[in-house]
Structure formats: structure tokens, C-alpha cells
Image (cartoon, rainbow, N blue to C red; front, top):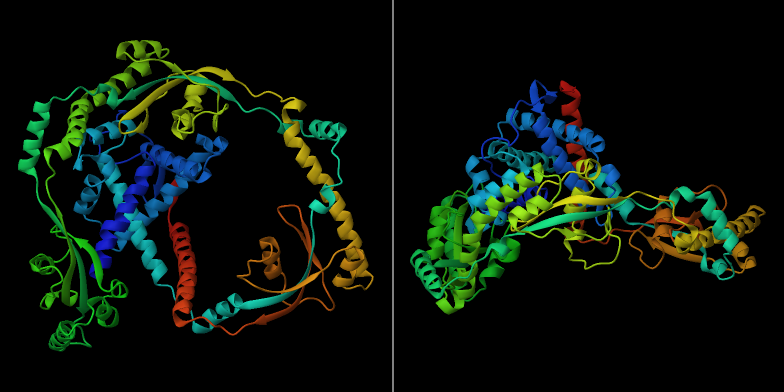
Length: 631
């Protein structure tokens, strides 16, 4: 209904934009790519061509997504052009097929929506206002265009709409759902025995000969990583700030006072009665009149909304729609009613395309102009940013040109009156020596630039690395430390626990073999365990059991439901090194005790899983029937 429509436009779509912004290549453009000249095609899908520029952008997108997934320990061998290009080609193929599919369905995204999402993005605003300078600076850095990015944003929104529609169309028969519920409610009686690794490690001694032998056999695993020392120059907008006088502050305050618009936000709730084949407008109005009488008699609006409102998106929350402003989010009649009401008053029935509404205002938040003393610090910062921004953008362009044409950073630094700084040793995961975690040398973008093929191998200055809208870096590799064979004394602390674990594992394996041999001679698991000095346990497990090791729980429910004749003892080694011996004694399906609401949530989760499979099947069908040529 009203709230869900609003959330879908302002919430999910906005998240699409923010998601794209995380990968640095974002919005608007100056109309043409920085690099001129023709570009070659890399892909043709059903006659539609995709060129090299689109591939480069997609590779950057894929690369940053992979970096984000890798966390603190990225594997840079998976971020090379050879690895990224095929992934990007497949991604572009999928996106092109989706674009063609939604076009066939006459699905579209209005330009106005895309533009509004772009201009309202905080990364391109200064003091809450859209900044063309920020935009152009960012675009020049990323070498992209307005048409290309607007198309990408629209495509992302369309893809989510298509996926949501396919997933939501899925259905399953009741008996299939019941089978899944029965599996979920299954319990298993498991007889199990744990052989803890600590029982054998306490008596194991790792000798120098042991570590030496392991080291000699695994030397290839103990090679240092490639390391570099980089030189870099930093460009900060704040370094360009100039003092601001009281007269400037007063003049700016006067200007902002003239332009200030008193904003009023109102917390709104409503009760909706639909007008449809089952309920005429007259019937809805009669019900509305009765509801107003109940409210006048003292009934709580929120409780009444929960019981009678036909807006499924807000009824459970007492009809709450959140805070509203006079910005066209809601239909005109609905919005006029909101701002005509006094606090806690109830409106007359308001008609929109959704039906008839009773509206109440629960809170009124008014934004008044602060005093000059309250606003002084903020105004000073605004004036400093405004004055420095144009200079900062110009310096970025100058720095990029100087660095591109220079053999090192000394000349650019001299021309820009900047200091050339030198890093400590850096590995691909950050500084080798412990440093402040907030240091820019820990930034993945710095490390990516330092270990990129052109900077590392060709010895050139890096492109401008934008760490924030007001902070950028240019770097070059000063010194490279190639990988070397580490000596035993450098890695003995790593090797010792590995050797200990191997020895312990071998002893546990002998103990396990002894117990299983006893069982093979006719003993039960309990009897064999006792003879070995252990005690087996019989546990009734459900899929939600939390008081046993997860490895054992998972294995117990992965085992066949019906064992062979007699006791079949299975084994597993946990991640911690412990050995478990276990057998499935009995399998039962408990009566489902879930409430209707819990069942509904469970079935919805299952539907989502199957729905995603339907999306995958649909995409496979599109690709199977398409004419695709890759170069």
C-alpha cells in the first residue's frame, strides 16, 4: 500500500545506488570518456554489442565486489586482469540479457527517478545540497559518463524488479511443504563418543628433529611475501582552508536566513479501507463513520488500525507510516489532510486510489533556524569548504597530470608544495610492522595501487587514489623486496603446532581403529568405549540442538535415516581435531508445534529459496536461447 510504495521507491532503489557507489565508479559525467578514440567490441548478445569501455568498468565493479568479500586478507592473485575479465564478460552477458528481457516486457525506470536518486546521494552533496564540483571530480577520476551510469542504475533497478517478480511467482503444493516441515521437525537418537585431541597432545613432545623434518618437507610453504616501500604525496582539501572573518559569517548567516525554509515533519498513522468488488465506497464510508465513533469513545488508534486496517504494510505497526513532509511522497489529498490536522486529531475519510483513509498525526517536528552563535562553527566550515573546493578540484587535476608525466614524485611535490612521504614495508595485506590501524597505509585502495602491475612492475606513478571526497593520494614504489626462503628459526613457532596436531591425529587414529575393531568383533559402541576408557552418550537431537558440537550435529542429520542391520558406527574428525564415533539409533518426526505465524515464516523462507532457484533457471533459459558471441 502507501507505505510499501514509498519504501520501495525511496528505500530499495536508494540502496541500489549506494551499492553501486561502494564500487568506485559512480554517477554523472561530463558527456564523454577521458580517453578518446574508438573502442572495440568485446561481446555481442542477440545483435547488441558491448564495448571495451563497458568491460573495463565491469571489471572494476567485479574487482571491488571481490575485495569486499575477501575481507582483511584479500587474495590478489584472484584480482588480476586474467581472472577478472572472464567474470566481467559473464556479468555483462547476464546484464545484457536482463536488459533485453525487461525491454520485451515493457518494463522501464523513469529518468526522473534515477536523477532524483543521484542528486540526493550524500556523497555528492555539500551542506545537504547537490554539488556539481564533487560530481565532476569523482567522474573525472573514474572516467565514466552520465548516460552510461544512468543506464547502469536503471538496469540495476529493473533487474531487482524482475528477480523479485520471478521469485514471488513461485508456489508449491501443500504436500511438498509438509514434507519439508516434517524434515525440519525430525529428531534423531544418536549414540556417540568423543575422543578429545587434548587427551593425546598432553604427552606428545615435538623435538627439533620433528620441526626440521617438517620444514624440509614443506619448504615451499615458507616463503616470504613480496613487499614494497612506497613514496606518496597526500592532497587534502582542509590544507586549502583560509581564515573566515566575523563579517563573512554574519553575511552568510543573513543569506541563509533569507533562504531558510521552515521544515515541518509529521509522524503519521492511518487506517485504510479498500474500495473494491467486495466493499463499495458507501460501505467503506459507513465503516469509517463507525470507526470514528469508536475513536471518539476513547479506543486507541493504533490498536484499531491493527485490527481493521487493510494496509498490510502498516497495520501490524498500528498504521504507522513514519514521518512525512510536504514533498509529494503521498497523494495530494492525503498529504493535504496530514498538514491540515492538529496534533492527535482524526481526519475525515480521505479518498485516494488505494481506498479510504482515516489519518492521525502523532508528532510534529519543526525545523527552526538556529541562532548565529549556534550556527557559527558550521558556517565557518561551510565557507572554508566552499572556498577550498574549487581549488582542490583544480589541484587534483594538476597533480594527476604532473604525476602522469613525471619520473618520480619529487617534481609534482615541488610544484604543488607538498611533502613526499615514505612508508614502512608493505605487504599485500598492509604494513609488515604494527602501525596505527587508522593509517592510510592499511587502506585497501592504497595497497591495490601499490601492487598493481603498472606501478609495481613498470615503476610509474599511480593514478590518483581517492580515499574520500576531500582526501587523495598519489604513490610510487620506491623499493621492492622479492619473496625469499624463510629460515627455520623464523617459522618454527608456526610449524610446532602443526607437527603436534599431526602426531596427535595419528594417535587418535590408532585409538579409533582399536575401538572400531572391537565393534567389528561384536561389541557395541558403549562396550568398546568402556574398554578404551571412555563413555558413550545417547542424545536425542533436533536440528536446533545447541549443546553438542555442530560438526557432530551436522553429520548426524546428513547420515542415512535407516541404518544397516545392526549398529553402524560412523566417524568424523572435527575442525578442532577431535574424533567422534556415532551411530543413528532411531529417527522420529515430531508433531509440529509451530504456530500458524511461525509456519508462515518458515514456508516463506522456503519459497524465497525456491524462488531464487527459479530466477537462476530463468537466466539459464535466457542464455541457452540467446545468440552470444564473445571476442
